[in-house]
Length: 116
Length: 116
Image 1 (spheres, rainbow over the protein chains, first blue to last red):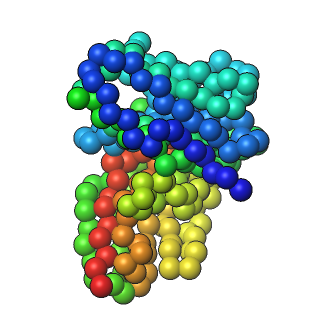
Image 2: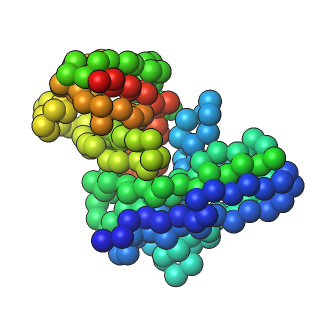
């Protein structure tokens, strides 16, 4: 079946512009995660959605970052007033329902964001 | 605080050599999960293994094996008879009960280069 898909695959933007990154999780997966992979910082957790529960936003680096998940499926990560340090690969993952911790996270191919 | 350390930044081997990737973790939780992911040049993270903190049995899967030792807080990964296709960045990760097992904390990764 289809895996996690993300769009766009690459995004180049100018400093100060807003960007939206999209994630389509695997059908039936109730949990969705956003991570950021940047040079020097490795892979960082950003935000986590589980069903209808309030999201865990503890990893968002600033209030310029926000994310939504509509209808328990597609998610959009929005970065407002982008800065050069936002340049990174943004990875989305999803996992199926079940006991927490037992679930493998399936990752998408990522969106490479470059802020000029 | 939870932390994962992969001290080896890059390892180069010749095909058919055995190679061990080190992973040391820190956690105050008694219940946690450890993971290894592979990131080939295509960029998509591929799940390799999940191990819970109560299961210290070593695991073998084909040419891959994992050595989990709670006494030294290590979860090392060995590839036997390496192949060129094993070239990738390998990440070790940790999730804790304290965060609902949902937040993966990654190490900085080890880049493995296998030459013919």
